[in-house]
Image 1 (cartoon, helix red, strand yellow):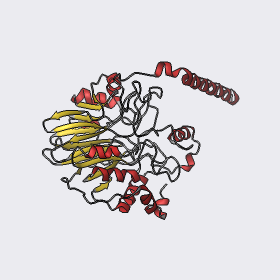
Image 2 (tube, one colour):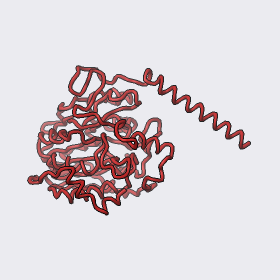
Image 3 (cartoon, one colour):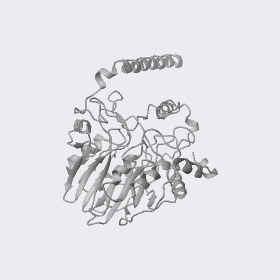
Amino acid sequence: MFIRLLRLAGKLLLFAVIGVCLALSIGPHFLDAIYYRGPASAHFNGARFNNPDRNDDILAGPPRSPGSYMVRSLTGAGADAAPPWPERVRVTPHTIPARVTGDAMIVTWVGHATLLVQTQGLNILTDPIWSHVAGLYGVGPGRVAPPGIAFDRLPRIDLILVSHNHYDHMDLATLKRLWDRDRPLIVSSLGNDSVIGQAGVPTRTLDWGGRLSVRPGIDVIVTRNHHWSTRWITDRNRALWSSFVVRLPGGNLFFAGDTGAGDLKWADEAARYGPVRLALIPIGAFRFFPGQMSSGSHIGPVDAVEVARRLGASRAIGIHWGTFRLSSEGYFTPPRLLAAAMACTGQGGQFDTVPIGRPTRIAPYSSPVGTKPVSRTALLACLDTPSVRAMR
């Protein structure tokens, strides 16, 4: 009986391999999609979008790149080399205000790149995902931390910013629930309206530099960052990725979305729209082999502190860590490395992390003028210490 089961398992495995090979060979003919049609530009060739500074995304890099990490994770190969993550992170529920008026600002990290920002009577959500798994058909990384705000305790949402179409940032099930409940204004970059529209949810999309008025004195500006997009692999870069500036009377909100460093000039461009009171900057999913400090499509703390400096941010919060395991750094490595990097740069402004689910009051804007730039080489030299080298 056991031998027959082994043979059956072998046949199923063979059929699975054949199916994958067929999908790879014929997939582009039926999985590709046209999300956007428009004139060519410096970052659109008439068919696909690109990073105008350089394209060094997830398929590039050394043998132990993000792509190879995904394969190792799925197969279990090399799993022992990665530091363990907790199976479950406890999140303490807190009372969330219905509204925050005037120049007061409260931010609550829901997890990953999802944050609730409340100010000027507006409730703003970034890249909302309440699903347990970030992936196609429920296959992908699962949460180790529940959402910091239960969906039924989430106040009415007015504005949603969607940075790009990767599953851990564009969760159609969550967007559908929010649209059916609140009818919020959803803003994204070119082509993403076609993807979100598959869930029956309308979205306003703009090119980099495009601006949309939310109400008098408050605008959303879609700004450049450095990333890529896909839902099916073969629809690669059919839709654009972006960061955002929300212009506010008490100082702007900057949401970096999901980004690599690129030329970093995108942070300078965002700063030109006015003082940044709060910047939401990714610090996780940057290590795919020991000692790595960034990847083409993700920044780690080393580059995140430079982003905050270029923005001139009064307050910055590290996001994109501690919820879904997307890379091989230890669970607490991003915030610990961020604290070490901030100490090395000695820069003004506050850049740290906040607990999932705990509302955090953001102080009025205060200019961190006077911070001198520290070269990446000098910063890495400063970080070359036993304590930092021990961070896996």
